[in-house]
Length: 182
Image 1 (cartoon, helix red, strand yellow):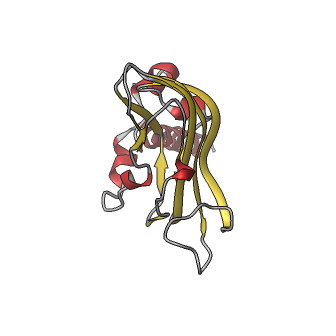
Image 2 (cartoon, one colour):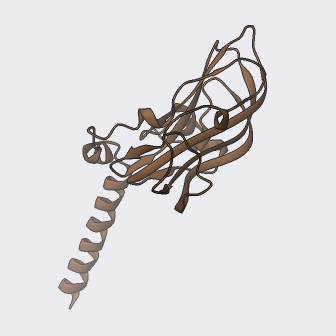
């Protein structure tokens, strides 16, 4: 009986250690990453001519995402780098567009609509990670995906401003320093 208890305890300890290794070793998720499924096109660079912008005024298509991607960082980039402002809203929505949808659309009449990432009224500067400000990571699943953003009160040394958010499966340095990951 003692041998059985000792073996069961040893098995539990080994299983726990293996679980920790799988969840906290960055090489494991990277091994499963699908490089043939790019996500860079989901969030295009936007040119801001004044202090405010809204992508609903731009013509752009919904894009297919062909695989599941865990988004661990959403990094804000500006050119010039001295820009500050407020993102009024930002979202990545997956769903089913209507059959007769035009090439350029919004998601108002989509069915099975799911917001995969989103938040509002976030003050930003170059290099900020929106995963921290917006409440956590996101999972992009296969389907038609539509990105939208709006902002206000953008200040810069000169215009136009180039605005981009970069999606990544890696935790940002900002996230790692806040949460003690190395």
